[in-house]
Length: 31
Image (cartoon, rainbow, N blue to C red; front, side):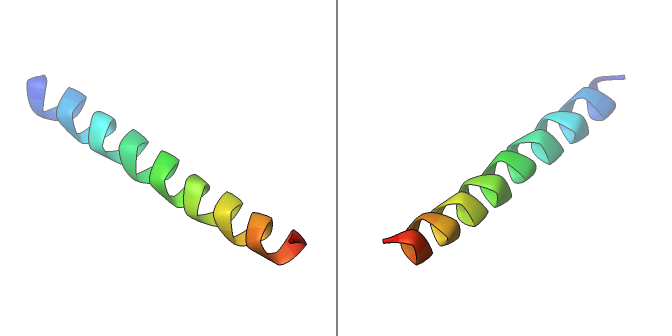
C-alpha cells in the first residue's frame, strides 16, 4: 500500500516538473 502511495507521489512530482519545464519553454519563447 505504501509503495503505491510513494509511486503516485513521485509521478505527481515528475508531472509538475515536466509542466514547469514546458511553461518555462513557452515563457522564454514569448519574451
